[in-house]
Length: 373
Image (cartoon, rainbow, N blue to C red; front, top):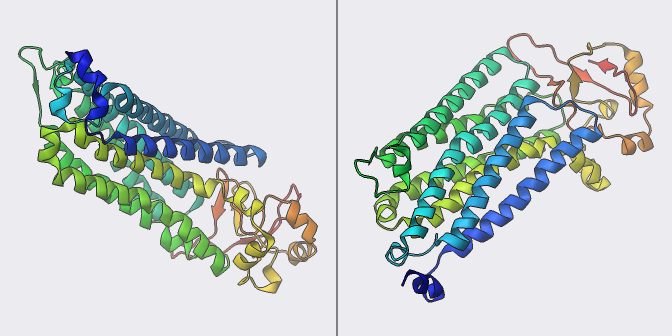
């Protein structure tokens, strides 16, 4: 009877196709962008930082989560109504195991490392002590929440196999929905903080307004992950009763938002890292538009500087920068609108703490970077 029921699944309402399409598309986009990020850093001969490895961890967690969703939707019956799936208890148990694994991978190994990759990137490029302290505080909350969710998920049922095998006598579970009501708002708040905290410093950078706008857009794209977090929380809280009564059907919509949240965070973390590659393949006209607000005497100046090099106020450095040819600029990865070594760079900012204004300049192909204030 159970085999016959599964054989006639095409006659049943099914909502899993949207999940399959979303998971496959987002997985491909994530792989491409992460590969481009590492390719860009490799070509620029840049050291890999902790944020790069955290991004890899987030990608592996996201892909593992996506693979489980595909398996559940294709083979286990996720996307069908519970009344139909109740005829096949072995598949229902498989779905419970998959959902349990997804819960473990979701925040602890997906959202948390992606958010930390963004935070560590901010800490490295903005040498402002108060900002870095605030970033570390936000990061501590993110990590603490990730660890708490990990242990809560693993031990939400006793014994642990009771998560998927409801026939175990004496088993019990805490109310996971109540915990989610507390976790989701904190997740959203940290996402908003990560989104807005670099904005004041971006607009203090000594770069043309066009570049400021472009960088602001890049940073704001990270807010799409926060939007997905808010939508996920809203859908969960609105549909909680229906989801409890028909989990195999309603888990599809939540699954799409779950995968989307982690994927958008990874995409946002990659965008700034691949900016040098983007500027290299951009049309000359668009590059010129980005630089249209640059004063003539600073057209060859670069708005980043490296930690291992000290600023120079030499007018000779400025003269050398002015002599840089168009051909040199076209061949250089370090175009005025590119991001430099994310491991070493510091973005010069006007701050009340006394961080000096620096407008570094590097000759295309030069090993030693002269800086001009």
